[in-house]
Length: 463
Image (cartoon, rainbow, N blue to C red; front, side):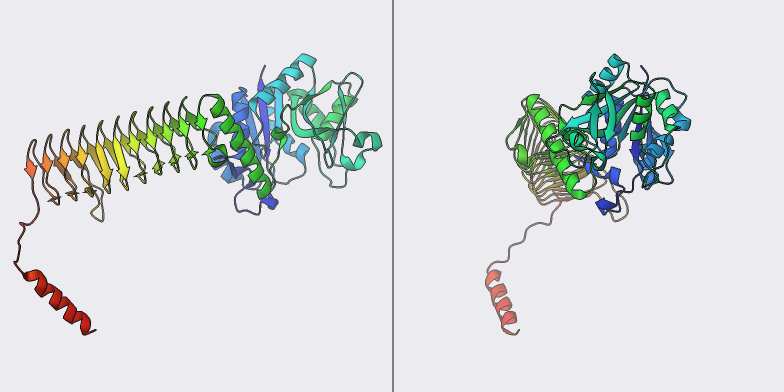
């Protein structure tokens, strides 16, 4: 069965009070419209048309060629919005899902269930519905004795019996594609708002004797639409709880779910433990048997199995299996650590490849560098990689030792097994097995300390 999607994303979203177009506001790291498009991709939709209006260029810039676009220049109602996809889809055979771009909690399993019911019943249209305790303000779903939908009655038009109905219209639909566009041609704007409504299509189909079904949501939260910042926060919390639950059921231990933030595309292996304050963002992938946190902020990074990261920030970094990072380390984009690497406190790594068994234990900076196996960086050792105009490369080969407070002035190379003495500033290549000393010879002046103290005391007294 050919499945298509029409995502309604043309509304301005004034209640968001934001310069950012409404459907681009993120929920768990992805814009709302991305969650909806992803759900359609997951059900193998062959074509998805996003109807844009205000902020059209921003939506195009984000979604790119994942979808097709139709422009609704004037916002004349939901029916009018769907009609903008006519030139793209009207000639197609198959099913079309019509869905709002501000419903990020919708799941592909729900869409699949709605499609299954639609096909089994031979329906012309199937509505997604929700049974709620308080239906006030929502359109009521009215069914006949066979269970088919006959009407959607808005709150203001309900009679006493209809007000008691708790099944409500969610605003997501599955249509026979050709029947959808044939019915849309009959929709008029004879109403107080002078707008064309997609709900009128249901009445037209019923009037033609077509079958209209309703698929009841198992989880009412999936129907949630976002119109302001308060609703955005509710959607964020709901999705975060859903994500955390999914990972825990897959074998991840989350010590304090209320204080653990995992974005939608993050992957985590079994038996990994997340401690409080952990934030995992973007395309981060974490292996098995890791301990992450407390207070670890990791974005778009790949973490091998058996890794420990605590009180540290990682951005676009790679950390090999068995390595440890932190506390208080900063791995910037391009940091690529091999296996069993130790990155200690107040260490910063940027655009540097570190081979297996490297140790950079404390108070060091390694940037724009290639570091060989089993190299030790002493406390305070740094690569001096920027000359004010260009970044230069530092190379340290296997088994070298870099003493404390060493400055490696790039471009420079330290050979295999070489030893750079503490306090040295290295500006020339160090050969394999060499010892490099680049510091002034120590000079002691006997008894001169008392003279200095006297000099400084007199200077202070004159102030």
